[in-house]
Length: 184
Picture 1: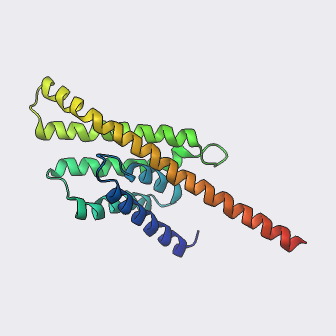
Picture 2: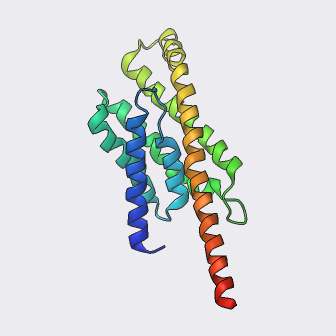
Picture 3: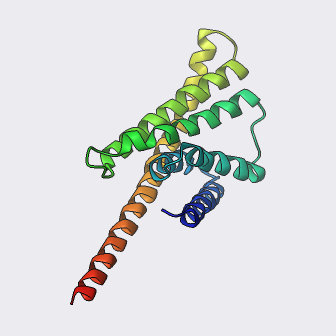
C-alpha cells in the first residue's frame, strides 16, 4: 500500500470514528473506538500508526464531548484502546493470512472485558471508598455500561471488518474481470 493511500485511510478511519462517536453519544459507551482500534491494528503494518487511530478519535471527539475529570481514568481509557491495536494483527489473521470473523469477535469481546475491568478499577480507586463494598458497588454500577460497550464493539466490528471484506472482494472481482477482458 502506498503512502498516499495509507494517509487517506488513516484520516478516513479517524473521521469515521469521531463522527460515529459523536452520533452515538446519547447511548452510553456505545462507540466505535474499540472496534476501530482492533481494525487499525489489523489494517496498518505500523503499530504506531494503528495506535494513533483510537488516540486521535478519543482526543478529537473529547473536544466536543468533554474530557475526563480524572487523569488516571483518562489514561486507563487510552491504554485500553491502544492495546487492541498492538495485538490486532496477530489475533485476527488465521494461518493463511485471511481475516477470521470468529477471532475478530472473540478479540472484540476480550477488548470490551479489558476495558470494563481496567477502567472501572481506576474509577473505583478514584471515586469509591477503598472497601470491598465500594469495589462491588463500582462494578455493579458499571454493568449496564458494559452491555453498551459490548454491543457497540460487536456492531462496529461488523461494520468495519464487514466493510473491509466487501471492498476487498469487490476490488478483487473487478481486477479479475479486467484481467479477463485484457486476456481476450
